[in-house]
Length: 348
Image (cartoon, rainbow, N blue to C red; front, top):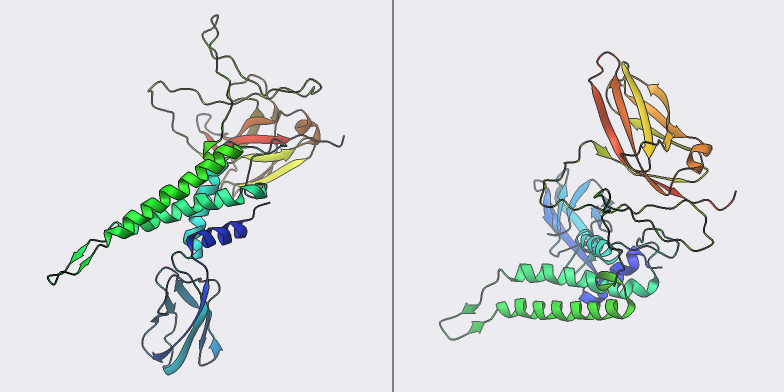
């Protein structure tokens, strides 16, 4: 399987941004707390700093600029030594942002052979290279954006420096890498150019409402049908804004589930209630959470589902928790809501 570090290593190889070591020594003046290592970007997690041979850890490292900020200025004539890892283009934090974006795009709407959401952890090893190419394209575009601000230099003595040529070369490299990624994705049916199969939704002639769609099952699969929750068209209307916190629950069918919530308000005079349903408008309650107030003053409660309750829950549903003021029935709050996912059990 692909790992985050293997994607980083492969992307740096494609970019020619391999790590290298540096060893710089400067002399302190007893006043300055800001010192330059003379190279950038650097890896702030691996840097080793000593003052007169004594390790110093209470510093702030600016990876992009290669600057180190001390809490206390090194003494006058003190030997300040910096040793660590440097890169040619991107530090670890910046490259990780490219990787996070590339992973989200590459695995969008994908599941593995067991129906689980695809993540980097269960991404097949054969997709490590195309994913690294997508990371490379994002890094190249960042370099191109930076070089776009360079202007050509024309000296009076006839010397011309076409600095904009670097921008054009980077764009050509971006197109080449993106074409390479696209070809691999099309051949393997993965990534952004993966072919997806959809079912067109129908509107009932009797009711004028959308007909629900269910995930297909094999002939010997007698489990409860799983409804596909598809977004509905807004037809130009303004979507309803989301209020309150969003939190998805993941549990196992037949297992006991508990979680502790901190509302950070005094719920002494409030009734706490939480339910889950197949869909929000369903008239049937899938399960009602057991509620135990741990600390009413701090608003700490524990919600629980029994084994019998999780055994009958669908693969996906909706849940929320509601606070009702016992002294004022109009004071109703829903601080938390989300989806509830139930993985199917095998041992019964």
